[in-house]
Image (cartoon, rainbow, N blue to C red; front, side, top):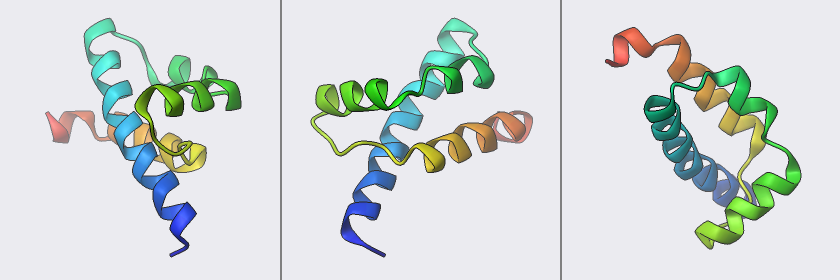
Length: 74
């Protein structure tokens, strides 16, 4: 696995946890969240987290996977 790809996936996992927490607290759904995942948003979040820019496709895969399996996870 390429080093930059690994860092992007690692950043996506961190951001995924943050987003899932927000979804749980604020009752937002995945579709609403995915709409805001622009390149500018991901850059801004990476700067706040002092992290690499998240791998957007991997992040969406995480969010959709959790949403589809929410009952099993809970």
